[in-house]
Amino acid sequence: MGQRGDVMAALATAVLEVERPHPVRVAIDGCSAAGKTTLGDELAEAVRGRTAREVIRVGIDHFKRAVAARTRFPTDSPESYYLDSWDNDAIRDELLLPLGPGGTRRYRSELMDLAAVTMLDGPIRSADRDAIMIADGCFLQRRELDEHWDLRIFVDISFDDVLRRGIARDQAWMAGPEEAERRYRTEYLPGERLYLDDVRPSERAQLVVDNRDFAAPRLVDQRRR
Image (cartoon, rainbow, N blue to C red; front, side):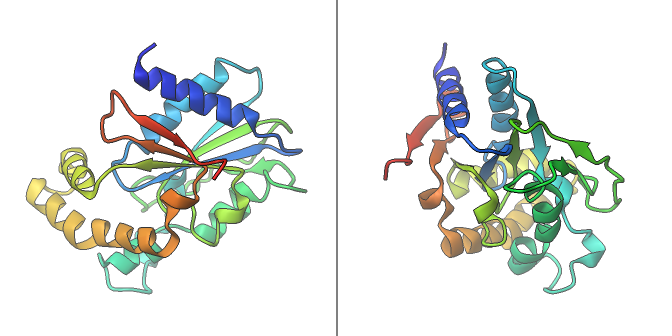
C-alpha cells in the first residue's frame, strides 16, 4: 500500500471510530482545487471496503445559491464568493439536520446543478440509522454549519497550489487561462483568505490532510489536542 493508500486507511479508521445514535456526518473541507472531491470519493470507497453500513456521498456544490440570487455583494467579489455563493440554510435544513440528533433521516443531497443555474428536483432519500455521510465542499466549518458535523477533515494546500491547480482545472469553462487566473486572484483566493482568517478551519478540524503532494499526502491527527 502506497502512502496515499495508508492515509485513506487511517481516515477510514477515524470515520468508523465515530459513534453516534444517528448517521455520522463527515465534512471534507478545504480551499478550491485542494483535492476534496477526489479524497471524498477515495475515502467513501475505503469505508465501504471495511463496513456493510450505508455510505452516502454528497457534493456540497450541489447546494450553491443560484447565480442570479447572489445580490448581497458586488458580482465576482471575494465577499460574494465567501458569503453568498452557498445556500447554507438549505445545507443545514435539507441535509445535516435530518441526519442529526432527532432527525427524520429523510434528506436531499442536491438542489442545484453545478453551474448554479438550474434547480434540481432531487429526490428525498431515507438514510439508515447507522449510515455514514461523507460530504466535500468549501467553507464547511462556517458558523451556520459547524455544530452539525460529527467529524471534520481539512484538506490543506498552499495558495500557490490553489492558483496553479485551479487554472489548470477551470480554464476550459472560464474562457482561457488568463481569465481563470484573474478570477482566482481577484475573487477565489481573497474569498478563501476571508474564510481562513475568520474560522481558522485547519486548526479546528480533527484531521488535516496536507495534499500538496497528491501521491504522498500527510495526515495530521488533531483529535487529542
